[in-house]
Length: 152
Length: 192
Image (tube, rainbow over all chains, first blue to last red; front, top):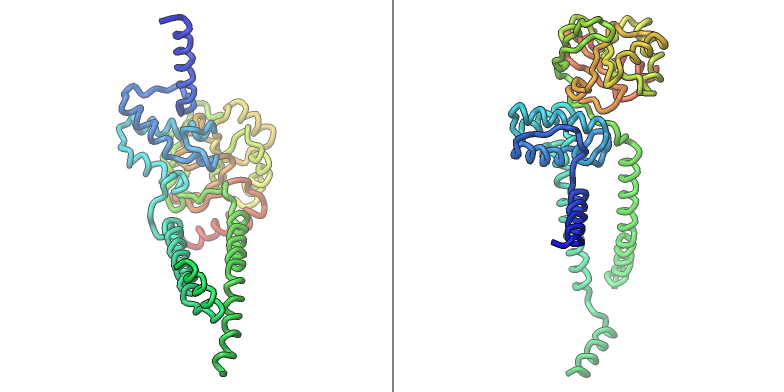
């Protein structure tokens, strides 16, 4: 491998590492690869409670670091993913979940888009039906007939 | 004849409604967005811990020479549990009101010194006064996570059985005390 190629490869590697969505470094490693993978997946699932629109994985807020540490501790203690979600939800509420649960208080959230789409479809249909149901006036009928004759 | 005269009037009314409908829809959308953006503070999270027991903890007491406190030390009387730190300006802003509450109402106040430096915290209490019965040291914020804390100050009203009854995120001032916390405290006395 030529020196230039090696340089390019190194640069590419550095770029790939920088571009990969790495979480802020907390100085903690989960030794088990499967656990580390679950950890990475879980922290993208939770919303940082302080920053409104960042996941635990992407946030640099101190509270996000505390919550990442909590997730790691729970994984290391052998908790299942569902138990970890429940653990954080019990303490921080539905807010912390990017994927809100379906329950009566969130029905509006889940079903309003569908209801609006149905309403829009119904209105469009009605408007379409009304337009096609309008009878042609004598003058309009004449225009259409002339047009058809010319084409025919 | 009567029918043909009525039909254009009817159609005109229909057209009028058709023209106003999008405007009405737009006005409704503006109203919805206005309410959504102004009525609710998006930085305030609903608390998930109301009516839940205060989480278990076993932490050193600030300046307590190695003594520790647990959740059992909160029980026996209603308490105001205040999460504070010296790095938190709002904590200083609410300190006078907490001091007044402690002195005038007889409600016992426990502090959680949250992610702070113990020496700084002790100096801060010497300088600004100490309304707390005791403070527990939550140096790494683990008790904060258990309490769903996402910023200081946060203040919890805990009943004599150790159940969380009210949570205030942000400053406790006179208005918050009188409109939120004092009524919740009186409620505890009314329903033993």
